[in-house]
Length: 130
Image 1 (cartoon, rainbow, N blue to C red):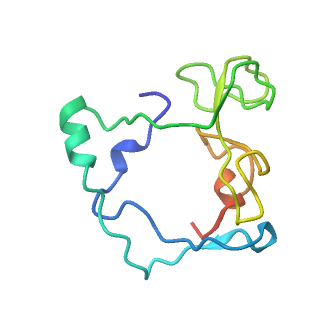
Image 2 (spheres, helix red, strand yellow):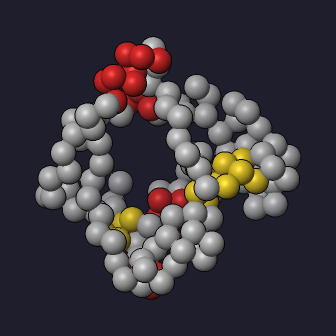
């Protein structure tokens, strides 16, 4: 629960804001478009009912067990930072067709908005005023 402190604010009726997938990394961050309908999350309520929590299990591409990337994340310490020696889960979302999960900017799955841009690591992928 400590690694997912904002999940209770998730709204299954509006689970995301649309962002286009662009062709090349230099076109990013992609601008979010709140005018595009995104549907609703059909299983969020069922998962919460079954597990009794807003916390979710999420797949991640990599686990940095030796803190090589410096995103140290000891259990219960969301993005503790470079000085922490704990393992961290890492996402490697691609930006456009020219990148792959092995050729992109890795970022921690737990973003405390202390590092990266104004909006943490989100600024690598999406452009938004908030």
